[in-house]
Amino acid sequence: MEYFDYYLYGLASATVFPAVFFPGDNPVVGTLSSFASFAFGFLLRPIGGLVFGHIGDRMGRKTTLMITVIGMGISTAAIGLIPSASTIGIAAPILLLFFRMLQGLFVGGEMGGAAALVVEHAPAGKRGLYGALLISGAGIANVASAGLMAAFGAGPKSFFMEWGWRVPFLLALVLAIVAIVLRSKLEESQEFKELSANRESAGAKRKSPLREAFRHPKNAILGILIGLPQSIAGYIVLTFGLAYMVSKGTQAQVGFIGTMIVGVLQIFVAPMWGSLSDKIGRRKVYIGACIAFALLVYPTFALFSTQTAILIWLGMIVGFVIPGVAMQGTLQTMLVEMFDVEARTTGVNIGYQISNTIGGGFAPLIATALSAAFGSVWPVIIYVAVIALIGVIATAYASFRPDTEDAGRLYDSAAEATATEPSSH
Image (cartoon, rainbow, N blue to C red):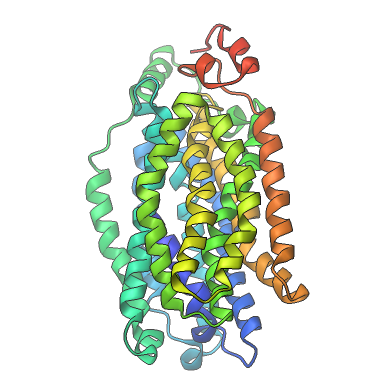
């Protein structure tokens, strides 16, 4: 439900916001301005990650998840109520940026709390599968957001540009209420309960989760670098890709439907990648997906240029469902296994949110600027390849908790050696 809100903004920034909030004679400038507002929301994601990571590691993952979904629902619904720039002038894009930043703040606390809660509840040998279910949820968000945009965009364009696009944003408030009811039933994991009980019985002073996360600075830094390829995958293929295909003459409706197809596949494919990582190791799956992303991005955009719906949808599957979902379905479990329980929410948020800010947040803006400056998509291909290479190197050098379940089976020989060391828990 939370990523429904975030994906809506990505779809609207590629198709609606340039005309509604950034009108002008030059469509490229309008698209750049819209993607700049898209990137702006990522600036508060690391702050949200630290704030809500602290709350999650001190007060519990459930508390964090309740706060974030309420804030996300309100800020997303507010975007749907902002008048256009033709009505209130410059106040319109200013309000858009304000609520976009609030979106970034609240979504910044989402993945760390959710990943820690889900993976800590997972049975032995199924952490990868359970962690990947979060990405199945994101797939549902893809289907719902793109489906609503496609449905309201099926009518007259004037209606969609004035009112139709607003309805999915307003529905975020209804979904937030549903999420509050669901999340009120969550229970903290046994691992977190034991940690809290030990703290109280020992009367120990609570350590700063941020300080604990950086007690192993190598993992904190590598977590950010590992997350870069997965952070740009969706935003290059699905967000910039949508703007790219529209610029080639394709109807936005084709992109919306393609995003729905991708979302449906993501629901089922993500657990398959997660389960595979339980069998052969997170590291192998993630590195293989990074390499595949670098190799498949060119064929993806070649298919986008055809203006043929079926080939465009094939390109979205080739470019995102194969490599992107594999990376996303593996990352959060890897990050959970890189940090101790007392700093886990904060540690996951550091890697996930900072990588999404410096990678994914600016990816559509960078890709649009590169393709406009060089008149070709090739600079975007090179950009993707460089980011993928960074991810491969960082993943190869990452280390995991010595008490990770099945560590000797899941990781390479170097990790097997550390798996025999005494656990700190």
